[in-house]
Image: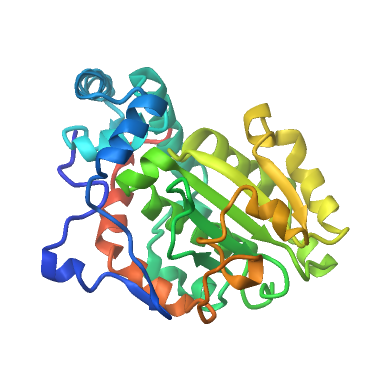
Length: 312
């Protein structure tokens, strides 16, 4: 038990210098360093994080994991424990439950999780469906854009591939200490959604996605913003809506083409001009996002070895 590996790998300063994507005048990179004083105060106020609480919660969570003979995880690695403790406000029992759900999901849905590493999911990146904005929003949150309308050609990229791409991106984001504290915003641009897209959504797919978001991934999801949605989007949302709990339902916002409505939640310094923001960049280089994530292939492969040693 307790494989010795980090939730996200460490690189030497020279290696880390090359782990970025240049997008016009902006740079995207996944951060491994700890956050500063400003975020320490936010973590204290929002998450109850203090040195004393952190130490006690890590010890209690580690004890729970040591006693679990089926769940094989790196419980000696504090960074790994904090990934689950921060979104659960340092309540070790809640963190343990989410961790159990996270790794049970991988057993339950091998079609999405088995052998999932970035270099194998290059296709969805090259379709330019997924964008991680280089700037965080005004509250320090990561912002992920999913363009599941006109850019999505189902014959070239399956819905399962999109989901797996989202899983890879968010699992990279939750490795960042600042993101663990501040959370994530997701924008779904549905412009161009047609019936050919709608038919791809099934109740089984919706159940898996909602289960992963609500019960499994250790992330502070601060908002899901639906924009440019045509009327047929109602057919898609009708599949998901009965599965949503009140907390997630209250964090879904429908903006249509109203950019000022979106800007009330995601500020202009983060968004590109297409979405009413101030950031002037060329189209996001999806292949480069895959290149960036692929630097961490070994990390994903190692973590794929963690989890339940037998089906639960």
